[in-house]
Length: 101
Image (cartoon, rainbow, N blue to C red; front, side, top):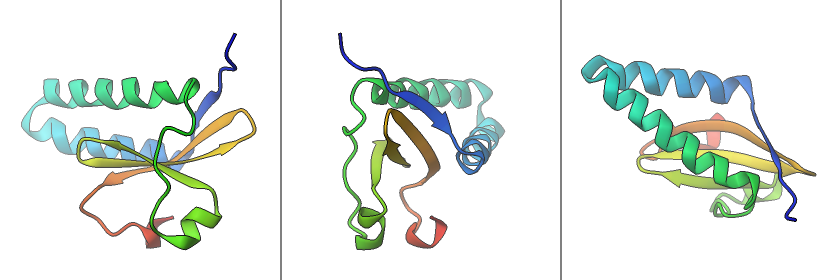
């Protein structure tokens, strides 16, 4: 049987997720919920495939062990620590991100 990793969200990632939902809800509450479902579905894949995200181009983030999962217009930044996938940030792919992490 495959090892299942635990997924944990840091408070910063929870805040990011809340901000995303609040922004989308302005135009369409249903779209906001659908998008959260899509994010959640994709992130849950990390339970069995923790290294499926790509390594960032930023050398500093690579050294810190970050990986990036791309979900539509957002980047999910995470690290794998033993058997925990720690979701650290969820930000728009249009933003410069190195200063945020």
